[in-house]
View 1 (cartoon, protein in one colour):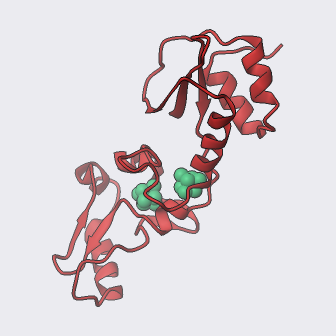
View 2 (cartoon, helix red, strand yellow):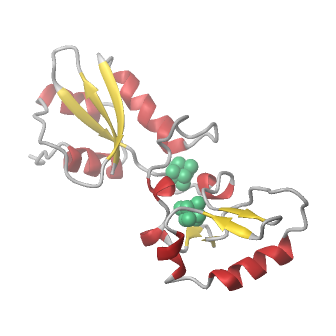
Length: 172
Ligand code: SF4
Ligand code: SF4
């Protein structure tokens, strides 16, 4: 779960969800799985786990045939097919936390991150923290004024659903 946690000037905490727009840019342009044709190796986290589900030898053979470069190159991710991640449930951690990283989306122009920042900036917060969490965070109490403000920013159905879920709100 990726979101921005805002501390507002009155001390209130509110969480704004990151909603992926499924554009595929991060897997096409900035694969977190790297094939090095010189070494003939795939570099990725949890390769052992992934190798239980995917025939990596066959994959490397396929990639070696495609890449003739003399130096390591970064390709579109080898697991990205038909505009989707074929190993989504076991994808590497760096894929799960994207677009949060040292340089956020590393300049690829993630539209989901752009939208998140747009909403965040509308709140004029005292402090903003971008977070990736695997478990539930402690409950926050969001006022009706903040909910109204969020709804005035033309959120999509998905953004509304995630906002309510993240802030543990009930629709009236
Ligand atoms: S670039 Fe951003 S919005 Fe597009 S698929 Fe990747 S995470 Fe989702
Ligand atoms: S493993 Fe999946 S999520 Fe990660 S870069 Fe490849 S296609 Fe994208």
